[in-house]
Amino acid sequence: MIEMMTLLRQSAVTVAPQLLGWELATQTAAGEAAGRIVEVEAYAGADDAASHAFRGRTPRTLPMFEAGGVVYVYLSYGRHTCMNIVVGPAGEAQAVLIRAIEPTVGLSLMRQRRGEVPDILLTKGPGRLTQALGITLADSGSRLGQKIQLRPTTQALDLSQIRQGPRIGIHQAIEQPWRFWVAGNPFVSGPKG
Image (cartoon, rainbow, N blue to C red; front, side, top):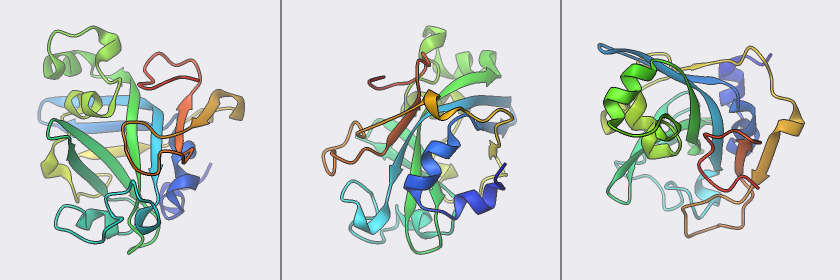
């Protein structure tokens, strides 16, 4: 099994599929909430027109320019909070968007945070999972291991379980097949192809 910080210093396209099956968790005063990562997208920094870092450093994107292991959180379309794990060496601004998790711990806490929704919609999509885990814009720039934790999988996925296709919900560089997901998992938010 690859050591987490070694993994997170590689490129987004390399890291993204390897994060499938890992557990994303938060520890807050309200308790622990966690889930197994089942869908991600890679964003390749200055070379990727869909990346927030494509146009360079801004106050919002500064966390992306840190070395791998930092959290980058942003507001999408003024409505949904989305969380990325920054990867690669400092200055490259690569990140992996966590699109969906399968809830494993703290479902009652997730239900409180999400309100009256079916369990299948607790963490199916990047805005839903941040709400369920209690991740906010204030968490942007924090390091993994504090409030937000990434835990290695105890059972690696077989390559036959991983699917790859175009990223969704973007308008630039949509041809890049940098979305990865666990085949057949009901919590995957986009097309399951």
